[in-house]
Image (tube, rainbow, N blue to C red; front, side):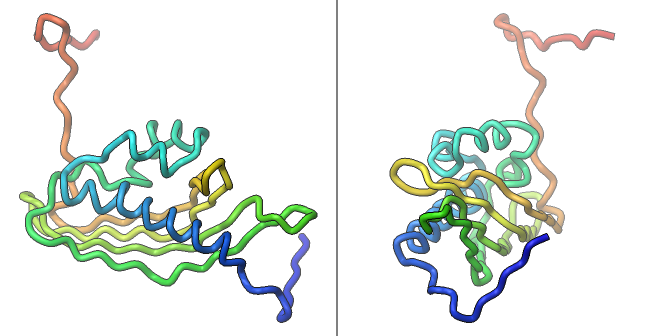
Amino acid sequence: MLETASLSSPPFPDEVRDPVKSELVRYVEVAMITPLRTGKVASSDLGEVFDLGAIYRVNGLERTIVTDEGFGRAVGAVEFAAFPVSLTALADTDGKPVLVSAEVGFVAKGRTRQGKFEISRTGELLLAPVEGGWRITGWNLHVQRRGTGTTPTTTPPPTTASGKKKKKKQ
């Protein structure tokens, strides 16, 4: 294991920090705040936040890790707090950043029809450069949902073209 530390490290370059932080703000808006305020995520907007490899994971089993959709629309205000973000970059041999790790923490509090909720999301988001900016390419997040308003809403069983519910095979 190789570890290096230096007190003389150059400051994090603005041309990387600013677009990465803007992307984090967009992620929070699209994946957390919008679903809590409207009750749904604009799926097309997720493609502007996650890179192609990550979007397949978002559209699969890991959706509830990175989004707050499915809990119904908040009634009233949603309080939202973000912890200070710590950025670490991995650079190539020319010093050009190829990955940025963002240590993040977010807390949302509010109320749905089912009751009060508090959702906290902490961990790491990994961002990679793409044409036109940065996108989230990976994550290691811990999500904790508390309160009576945190039970995800369910969707009805799929229907056939005739509108009849499909029967389960036994």
